[in-house]
Image 1 (cartoon, rainbow, N blue to C red):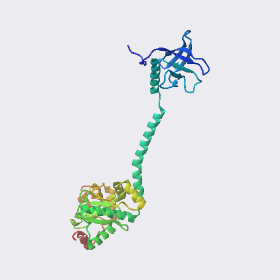
Image 2: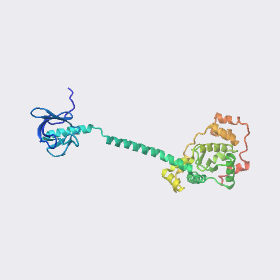
Image 3: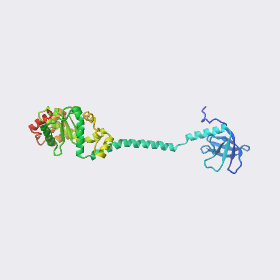
Image 4: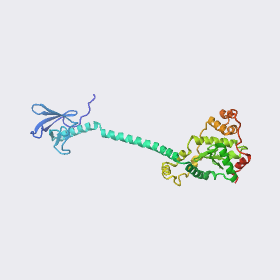
Length: 342
């Protein structure tokens, strides 16, 4: 047989002294216990004198005996005095049960506030760094970008060796950059090693293109190197290298760059490992074919080595209406091929 909800221990009825108002005489009454009420009755006539909802009952003298109760906070002076400890314990147990079931707006507000705070902090943690990096990168002038790019190149030298440099080779690299990229050329830096995982080329902030010496020394003409450099330029233009670099150095260093104009002295230490292990982004074949056509560079020599079987690049030379142009005079190409011999 299923039982109703268990009642707290104690007598189902007790006696008490009831006062209707502060001026009235106390009179003895019988107190009956309901599930959530007290029923006050005359002991002789059994006339019901009142119903008190235990959810509203307050104890006027906590932890003291006899216990004195009022039917509600701020009532009109009606009181009930109960001396029996078992009856008092029953009343207190019922009041605790009611209080535990009562909704707690304060706790709900606290939970909602905590959820809102967590959401706000999560939003800030995600949004603020990205916004700060984008703003800082966009605010840097070209000269500062080039300076940071050179500093990153200095860190690369730990793993790649110092970029190849010779007077004739440097002049030839600059002429190749102007030939391929026009009035705002990239600076081409030839590295001795370290670009295997990046596909032979990479780029740094400040319009710096890096190319492996093997792509220059192993070919009789500059067409292969030119194709690799044009492809890397497309990668550099598709995503801001400065944003990627600032994401690596972190929010604190980026904030200092924005406020003082300089990165912390050791901010770029270790950036080489990130740059040299980053796989190259895919370059759209149509965009590359168009860039080669605009520069007057044949696509086939590059395509045979870097993207064999690519139908777009294979057909690019046949679709041209203008012939390819000389990339570098022989003496400049020879000088560039010897840039790492020194």
